[in-house]
Image (cartoon, rainbow, N blue to C red; front, side):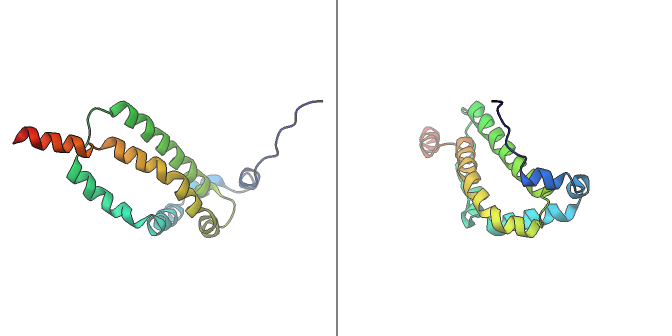
Length: 131
């Protein structure tokens, strides 16, 4: 018996019938995705830049940060590509899936963010060495 392949996803089979290029080059789709992302992002994201300024960047973990950031960027690019090329109504697609995608991507974002910063112990030691 020959192995069978899974049928194509509805996102790909329906997208092939529509103009993907027209969707990817439509700035309105980008604005809609960005607007929904800003609306649905956790409220404490606004406090992270303040924390980063207070703590500062950590210089000794650059390799791990780069790998984690690359994973985060690739994951985000995949989600963006799915939204841009969806054959369904974009507002419906965002409404039914963005919260789930944010829950999936949030831990990676937090990991990258805190790997890039100094630890509170490093900050305390740097203040102790100055005084």
